[in-house]
Length: 325
Image (tube, rainbow, N blue to C red):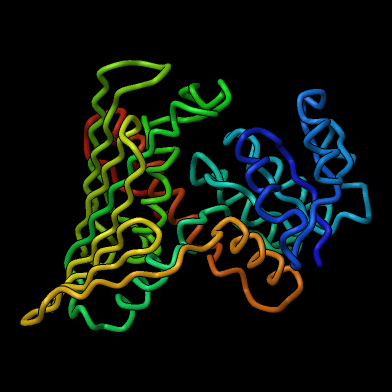
């Protein structure tokens, strides 16, 4: 059992606690940090962990074996670096950083300290996405030619703190929220992005925005791709890979459709899972040396590099090359 601290107890930080506390045999929260402690004292008491307002208090506590970060996006790199410097493994909610330079700094700090770095991209642990990864890697689809991803999630108008409305924290419309999960899926399946063209159309500003993100990708391996994100539409997830012999389409957490040449479509359905618990337990396993964390650090950087280029493309309605330095 890994004794951990949770930094940030807003809507998502509470979700992480709720998914593992007294449910997981791999990770347990014993400390929490919040800048608004009065608003979460009852929550901390209910879940049996100590509460403070300073990250330094947690880092100095020898009982804390790992740290989970669920704070505003721009704080992630600095907090990751501080945790690594204290010699503690760190799990950060996505995005790892808002630009490649900060992502590199965070990764290098963990590598230098020799600590595990986990990343909160829980959609990777959905059964549909794991099976899609397996099918693509198997070669069954033939030569991969194209990939499409779409995410709509009306949660952007609900539950969130006001900082999520700030352009500095959530640039690119729905891209920093649910759209980033799709981008992570595309990089996981196709590898690094070479260039991206973007379009952001907005019909209504914050709060409750009405906007759409459209991105076109070229990956380093020559595969083409598209990504769409809509913040006002109810939850919808689709990642579709097209090859020379067939295609595979993940729909939501539990469904996959295979369409092979000369055959009827094959529909696969999987039991739902607690993906937040699974990703945190994968982090705990990595901390204890049972298995590497399933997202390589280099791929974490690749996703942020593609994200940074995508934001620039959306802001300029143009094509942007991904930073390869």
